[in-house]
Length: 311
Ligand code: AMP
Ligand code: MG
Image (tube, rainbow, N blue to C red):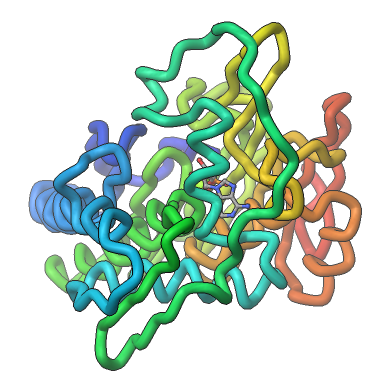
């Protein structure tokens, strides 16, 4: 997922292990918007970077079995992850941490070797989000001993939402778009034609003529895919989206799902869930009225729940 160049000012960078793009409709506001976004991104990195042993999340994961008081920001991030679990009947579940590491994704993706020797993987249901004792008002969490929280499916998207909201309140006019690795949130007044977003399985790919484009005016859009964050071990292809029922990389029919929702975090909950749920996602997405574009393993595209036909 990437956005076309329709607005007047764009700042690009790197954040949270991926690309960062900030767009504003009033060029003079770009620097202020970008610095608001950078502040939010830095705060999330300190709170929730699972590859940094000093992050608040890593310290929480290292302190099972008792109530730990957490920061307001980590509280929001965990609340979003548990909202994902609730909305998807556990297809999206932050207790995938150990399974993600066992599959070989145990460092910032750039440091995960693309090939390696075979690893032993045993089918085993993940611990499950019900095992987490979370009190949002008191800001406390108690993790069972076997749980490693992974906020990967919601943290980046929530960061886009928080960053876009912070930027628009800082600049006070016009519109802003924040994209973190293709998890896009928009706030304020959109450009006349809306925010034009080009669909892609790889948010790092360049904008191309003739690719399918969708316009959004509010909320967010997110893509989950098994085609980009993948690697092989002993010749077996593995990827980063775990089926909670098996603890192994999911093997459903969709290789990529892109969803539009009222927030980027809800879009990302649904896009990750679509990959995990497979065929059953179609009904779930239609019932939730979440416009979705699915790409199956052979590359065929299926559009549902109001996703526009390409013109
Ligand atoms: P996304 O690319 O937004 O779909 O998020 C995928 C990331 O979320 C992975 O890199 C893991 O860190 C984490 N993850 C993988 N499988 C799941 C799952 N079933 N539920 C929640 N998080 C997951
Ligand atoms: Mg995502």
